Length: 363
Ligand SMILES: *Cc1c(COP(=O)(O)O)cnc(C)c1O
Image 1 (cartoon, rainbow, N blue to C red):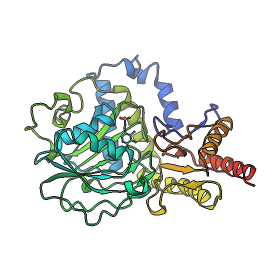
Image 2 (cartoon, rainbow, N blue to C red):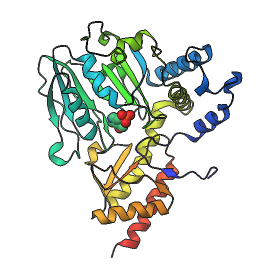
Image 3 (cartoon, helix red, strand yellow):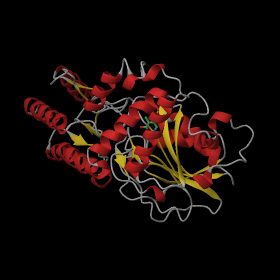
Image 4 (cartoon, helix red, strand yellow):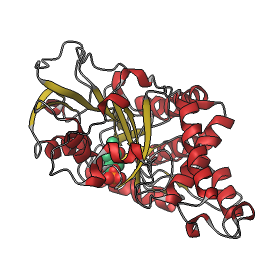
């Protein structure tokens, strides 16, 4: 490998495409004749305005975002969105949440601070190893929205079919699957994603919100910064934004466009995930944690027969030059995050390593 980089299976911050990092490195000391690095630029400058505008235009192009949706770049990462969603969307006072794992639970707990939360479906009964049936959900008439975590980063599940929200607004946390596959934005009222999973550096969320959900009548306790409309009215430049993250994400958006867009990404992701899941399903030592029909293409949790062996595989994988295969501390086991930027060669190398480990450690 050119730079002696490791195959990094981190859930986030995570790998970025190597050509993007190279471009950023080349522009580090003098961005396109501006005489400065993007980190040093005024967010009100023409040159930065162009970076921001291109990033938004490329994202709109990539996802086919309709004109009646706003694209916002907001600081505070993913966690701030757990609060911003109920602060901005609760009107009647009831929010519906589908509980599918660690990240939807966090969203639920935060929403409870602002109103009544109904958990209308859950997969808690089997350790969040599947996505519950969402074809006929008990959605109350006064529900303001239905919230899902579309890809549970820690538990490794994803939705292959969106819930029937019975006409209510669908809100989705797409953090760990953002731009991994084509997305019909019109099915959602609001999509948000922390960008450090599948796109760029940490510390920012992209929010895609239908214009009619922007409000002038928010309760007075809502801080100015946490009002989506403030960001929309100011092109995400109400205050100093995370300029660096916007720049890096813009590079990734352009890279994805140049490499076939979201359909091409999806094809590659299906192929990569199949290499890993097929091996796990054939193995007598490793077991994939999630029901086949609901498996994430991005985050692949798996276990050995014991906690001790889980730890041993993690240690051996580090020796072998892989990184971040330890499962999240809340669930244990192992997890390989294989986002857009993980090359197929990385997944093949991981499977070769696991095969060898299995051969050496089974009786
Ligand atoms: C990582 C993650 C978050 C939280 O993001 P932070 O930027 O760390 O606050 C929320 N939802 C999902 C699905 C995530 O993977």
